[in-house]
Length: 340
Image (cartoon, rainbow, N blue to C red; front, top):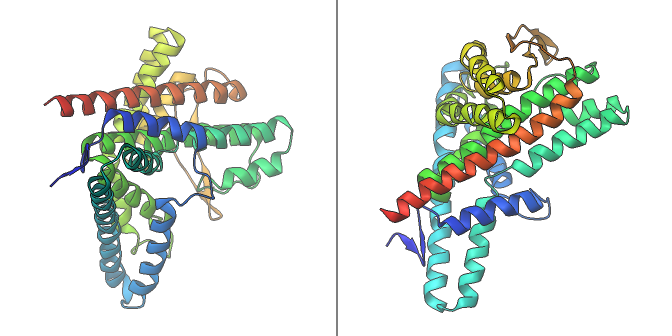
């Protein structure tokens, strides 16, 4: 049996998807509620400790990292399927409107945990607010929670550029990719994706500790985000043309994405970042320090304005609009699946 009352294991009713999107906008990720990503993080930490104790040398670390990269998404998918089956049995056993509502609310919450639009916009506004109050030291600290680069010594405009980059990249990782996998394979596939993304954020670094151990997780994340990143870039291009009613801006965004996006070290992150840079007429990227080491990163876009304060405000609007387009696209896919 592959249904949970009215819910298919690898699909979603439109009402659940739309309600989950609205719930994320309303409450985001409150710390007092259980969140799957926190459980994934604990599992990754525990498995890393256990696996590292069993291997030696770069070759052993790569094999152990591959086991980790396979196991965590697999466990996430299987646990999600188990939870859905339990909810199904509860709904069937009690067969009452009240129980159906409770099961539906649980599903809405679980789906909302795969999305992070509210938290993304909130982080941008929080850091921008600190800059407006000239509390630049605090803004650097807040920025360090959402980016991997060193934030000490960054100027106000450098902080705003980092905000723009994280808005574009995390629109892909935190909104469009989950919507893509929700439409493709329902909650199990979306939470498996979240596990892959969490692995990359915890062990997918090229530093001495994770160069070998985190290799498989980083490559798996590149693969999982390949299509969503390109969809995100196109959605930002569409949003720029729609919001500004300017074919010229839309063309500039697309051209920048096409020409500059591939120059980024990541096969994925550069595309939405370049699309946003082109849409806003700003220049992103450039040299940055990671762990005290300066890295020469390519520039994305051309600086047609140096008003990065206004650019952040406009970027937030474009991100919300692009996310709405992504929601509509996922809803359309679910509609087609339900009608077939």
